[in-house]
Image 1 (spheres, rainbow, N blue to C red):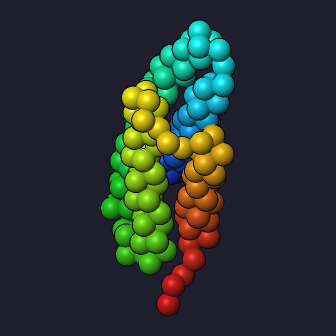
Image 2 (spheres, rainbow, N blue to C red; image 1 turned 90 degrees about the horizontal axis):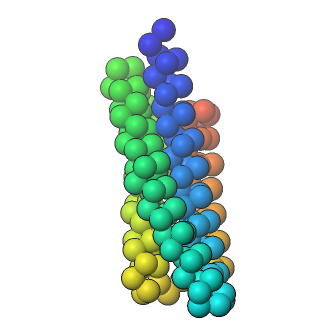
Length: 148
């Protein structure tokens, strides 16, 4: 009975993690697009978006990442999944996703500091990178492709 509970908690955490990352970059897109507003509107919108980004990153994305890793590690060790080759590729993409999270966290700081150089179009493309990670990680976990 423990296995399905751990797996459910792992999947729930993963969904929250991806939701946080996808929404974070969307907020960054809105932040950049607020540059075209009047100075007073721009400040009000960007101030609100900065607060939303910080809360999303620190209260949703980071804890969800941590929970995903904890539940995934428990599953991996308890059920000796670490011996299966498909998991090694999945973990490579999980580490890539962690790097992605660090990168979008830096973008958040750059937006606040006024040193951002990315356009809204570039951020839209960056947002699709997260979707790519999602597709690969889910397929690796559910198809458990064998590599020989």
